[in-house]
Image 1 (spheres, helix red, strand yellow):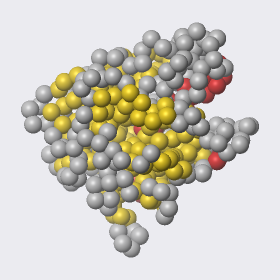
Image 2 (cartoon, rainbow, N blue to C red; image 1 turned 120 degrees about the vertical axis):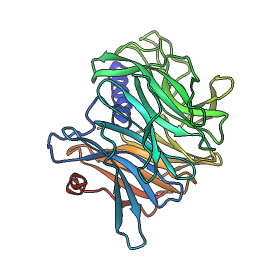
Image 3 (cartoon, rainbow, N blue to C red; image 1 turned 90 degrees about the horizontal axis):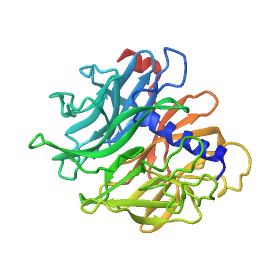
Image 4 (cartoon, rainbow, N blue to C red; image 1 turned 135 degrees about the horizontal axis):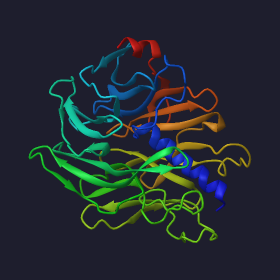
Length: 365
């Protein structure tokens, strides 16, 4: 694996992290102070609404819920009681009655919870660290999330969150517990895999990273199990999807696809039967020049189905399955203009439509 290729993968992985979770880097690519970008959509259990963050690099973030009606018109709910500068990774409880998210400033982001109507907002964690990507247990009584303990320099983005592990917060007792002690270089998007005994996530373990010179091993989803730390060694493609059993915390493969490159996890249905993931599709499409392209795939009953064919014009972010696995959201960004658009449709890729709120609509909220 060449140095250039590694750097491209490094940039892609952290761009995804940047748009979905990292609160320190502006989530709005444009310099126009009037433009909002959208990130981190999440479905309500009834499939009738989504909640997402609309972000402006000057005015900060706004948490917005968009309802779908039979007429095709949208109803919008705004949560002005959330005063923090950064608001990230909102997620509904399994019964749809609560929303959890992380919020904060440049010094820390903590986990919050509120009723879906915006009432009874309360802060759960008091860590003084950088928390992100909360996810409810099936019974709605606890949350898992990632905590970054350090902010380290990065030649790619200036600063990067690191030293990551998974934590759990029990809503009935108010107690927090640490589930992993891996000190991952990066860890994103932990979710329960069909119950509460297995966790699935993207992660880069500590000790396997030398910036811009060495290969990178991404455990849990995009994994290269045979990579040596020798920068001259030839690495295999990232083509394994891994999960971590909740009790033993050992890594085991969920599936291996030798014909796919750079598999990266995005979302899962509550029953664990459907997994949405992103794959680099240049080789698959016979494209040997130009930018790397990525598309959404859906795995169900051991079969992978390609959902999108975006080509080189767009970048892909914000892929999320509805809890029942029937619906899908994705954020498509134009590579030239940096305009991103929020699309919803069926999980097989049919009936996709653009539901992005205009910057004028968001500014008026």
